[in-house]
Image (cartoon, rainbow, N blue to C red; front, side, top):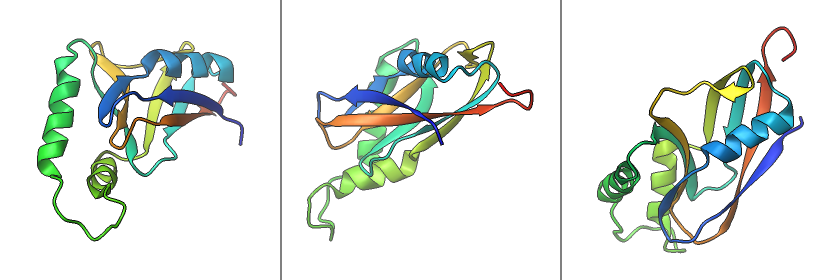
Length: 136
């Protein structure tokens, strides 16, 4: 199955990056006009989500809330990044988003976000096209 790979270099141990523009670019590269784009994060300490794009403080608040839900306590996993695995599991590795007229069909204030919980690292997201019944 063909996909476009989006490169996501992260700069901090924990950060939430707006990748909406990169996803739009992948949709163009895939030639998808109508249907859905499936985004997959092939990492166990990072995740994807859709959230508010107007106020950057929302990203900070989401990260802070996830840290409160999964504190850095002694875990059995020996690598020391168990909180990153658990925060990633709460959000998940996959998004399925509608595409209309060759563009993401998001709400007014929505954006697509890559969530880094064990950085900084060179990450990637795969974008797959699911064209509408007419072929796309």
